Length: 354
Image 1 (cartoon, rainbow, N blue to C red):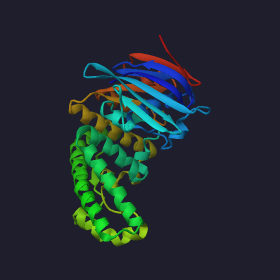
Image 2: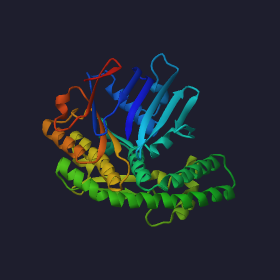
Image 3: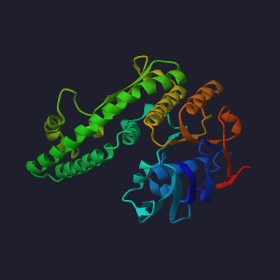
Image 4: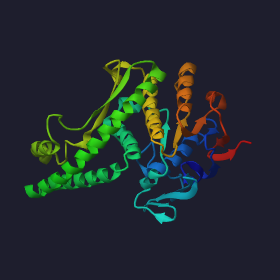
């Protein structure tokens, strides 16, 4: 659970310090005041990236050489400190006084998810966003996943380099063996996770868009072939294009509504609700596992939703065990949520509302 955060030089926020309620905190302010930047900073601490851009340099203040985020986390009743810093020379992170090789390692003790106005892109855009969100869930439920995923990514980079450099077939063979062994386990853990997630997703989607919504997992190579054979069969094509075209890095999730692909069936607003159902299903499954509460952030939930759909979303959000951090133009858009702590933001300045 995130109990407090300090932010320095992140986008329009020159300096901020907030203490969070264990159940629900709201940040209120006009559009373009810094509300989303605050959520981005929190998200960066738990993911090592923004949910709006992959370019870290865009997160720097306009005249700043670095940004820094420090969070206080309550873990099993004990306080620990996590921090992340970025400058043009690179990124650094620490947890409980120890340096980390990756900012994303903080995610193990600080699970964070976000539902923002752009969450509908989960349904309508390419597979990378869906795969990344799926893997967040697998990581937090299947703790061995990260090790296998890192092994697979390393082997994938090496095979791609061997393909581009025209290495001897024996070199490619060696990396294909490692790619196949680690890839099979990555695939198995993902498939098991999605199977367990389906009931939670169907329940949430039924509440939010009142339909029969389903998710299914597509593994990234033919169901009729073992991964090792699929890699060998694809090698001539892969050598021409210089990259690996089959494997778990090509996996995807299919969303269907009443048996039809969701992006061909539902409106933009319904896409947002369906994507929110997926995020909430992941939070619900993780809660059922008995882990630490997920820090669930809602960025202006009233955006693009009518009163009826907003009510459904907030009711579903409060039905899931989590720590809520929400932004809104005004608090009236959050009816039904018991708010424990309030802040106001304007022009990047944040102060508590007593």
